[in-house]
Length: 437
Image 1 (tube, rainbow, N blue to C red):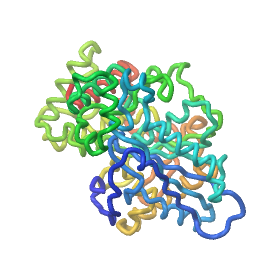
Image 2: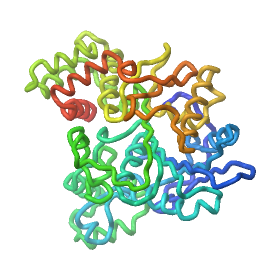
Image 3: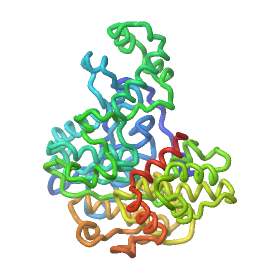
Image 4: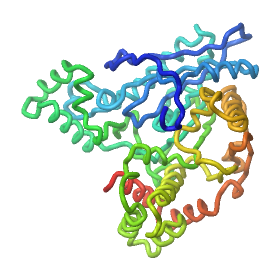
């Protein structure tokens, strides 16, 4: 797991597959238990393009052992779902041929249906299922709340939530499909012939033809993804969690979650990051008098900054605007390296504890204890809706904060700018810079 600069023993690669990948890894605590155990289901991230439940950083055995040691045993399940073109290619001709949209999201729901039906045979409680998702897995977990089905009781969102990565339109999905068909040399074929080619080719051939710059991600289909999630829409009465069984949502973020975009190389290799961001901000915010200058001052972005310093400041802005819907910002509790994307998983699942110092290990265990308590139906801290309470993890401790004490001056100023010119406008600036538009 290079993104956090430490490695774990890597199992043998099981190979690519179409639907054979749709497996569950179930981790069960040893010993006898007085009653059915609550269940934690994990949905991995990876931009809907990469990731798998066999990756060692997602092994659930360590947190299951910890839950048993704490006297709060739980069952943990790691699911797989189809990614990229197999999971998210969409077009009118595919739908007419009977292929539904958002197959990757349907895989996730099929897994939860299976768990709900059969987990009692493993000692689990089908009425106490918590779904946790990291990055786009967090997006997926939130979208489970859009259905009226009584599937899950609790949700944990980590490092990804609407509207940070919204769905694409059917027209954009159609363009990606046509590009894929072109790469397969099928442009001149009829719809029926194209479908036959897609049915016949291997998963390796499909992956090779898939252009990584094209969006094979969830599409706005009015069914599994009924909302075009935006700040303005999510604040309206039309944005509704329809789930009849969900009791609570825990939202977790790392202060530099946007670091994933730099790691992916989307803009971190560009020269003149400060000037490029400044020019784009003034271009896109020109109708909002003083908005660009105010934003640049807020993050200290000036033309003379070197690229490394500018990158950190732009990523801080991206983290702030990208995680605005699910938190109020808390400052770093101690000096050290930044809390980046996926660090939460490395702490939560306890798989890196032997690589952490005593303070870091204590923080990881406190974090896991809070999540385990949540899975058991407890409240690790007061709900945000009641008191504005949040918890801040750092220095080996889990501190509870309320209201404005959980906000930095920089975040307060960003929020003020967003209220003045629109948070969707700020998010649009961030996405335009990341993707070079």
